[in-house]
Length: 185
Image (cartoon, helix red, strand yellow):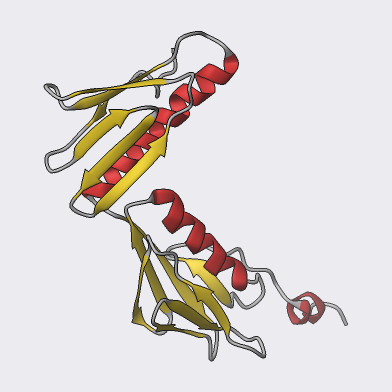
């Protein structure tokens, strides 16, 4: 049995779950998410004990993989509608900054043009200041994907450390040519 897949997903207070016709619908105070279940996997919600159980019919390799994956996706949905997932990014570099105009994030990160990224509808984007971006959403995949798209605009470079990085991300720094040539001569 899959160690992850056989664990029941606990449903906290204030979250409602509905399972029917191969879909799982989860509603909470922070949003509503749904997931289409693979036909080989079965999902059952026990309203008395307030937990969701995911099961599989056989021991095939694909079924085992889908078992753990489905349970993890449902767990993320339940956790997200109870408390939204957050991702913080910081922008480092002279003159590098971000602005939010409506539902469009504008990044000035050393290019000739301003990079404009439309914010997905399920993601909330806030700017505490012009060098920090904070994303939150009940959908873990949506917030992580949009954070990766923002970071990809200008990843941190190893010489000066300029660029967009996740909050707390450590960038390995390299010694430049000046340091390497200082000992020769």
